[in-house]
Length: 328
Ligand code: TYM
Image (cartoon, rainbow, N blue to C red; front, side, top):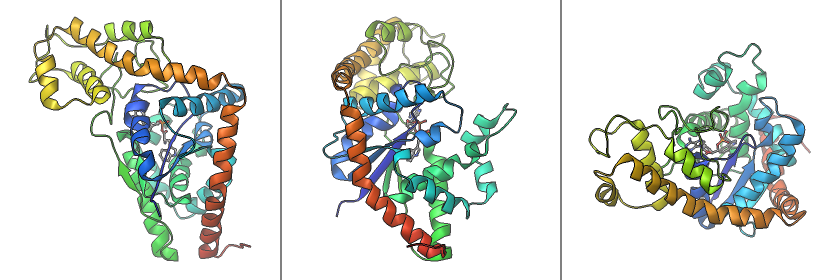
């Protein structure tokens, strides 16, 4: 039997090249080596208020982007998390054995909670729900960007705690990061991770940005005071641009050096922009085709739900039995 891979994306903001290089690109590559499940995690999205209409629209948009990027719905399962009740059920069961201290230590929680007058408890429980997403399907591999590494460690801690309290139940999931592109930085502020929620029109390249806007954003990207690329002294902005190029093109370190050493920053920005445009244009074309067919994406999500619901139900029943709560 093939091992399972599971990963997810929140249906908030606009998916960007960080999400693509950190996660989606890897998914499309490894999907056939595993039984693959990719979730649109709408229950995670609502840990911060979302406009209901916009959220509904986003879920289908993300499903369209998954397929446009190359997720094959005939082989891989795409689901909206909230359609499989097991995610919420297992999340509660796991919450009951997760110390609050573990959750308070999460850096994403700390940064999201910082400055908020009222911190919703769902924001703190967020990583437990993520652990439930993974453990529900006994996934052994979780391909994500670097910012999710701490959540994956917590998932393993929760699984281990459960297994030692109630007996071997959960598979220990492994984190799979891409070799290049695990942490794409903002174009305007290369010290900060490229993020869906960051303000600023020059911060992120969205996967659906038109080519001219992509070129404009790269043109305005922050570099440093050198006039051209120097691999020894380059600052984070130039390093980020080169990382983006390498992650899209998959060329070797030596080829990168040969191509870019001494290149003026104006030319560097143009070269990177053209590489990104050449990859995103076909994705955007496929997205337009996929979304022009009414009902198609809803059908893919329903098929996905039906395919994995029995697996989820089995894990929930087993977990309940192990914990001694009433199960049928
Ligand atoms: P989310 O929606 O923030 O991001 C989706 C994926 O994109 C990666 N990513 C990045 N990679 C490289 N550079 C960046 N700047 C960058 N920004 C985001 C993320 O690492 C992620 O892989 N908690 C998750 C969603 C989730 C999940 C799961 C993931 C819920 N349940 C179960 C894996 C397994 C999140 O918020 O991702």
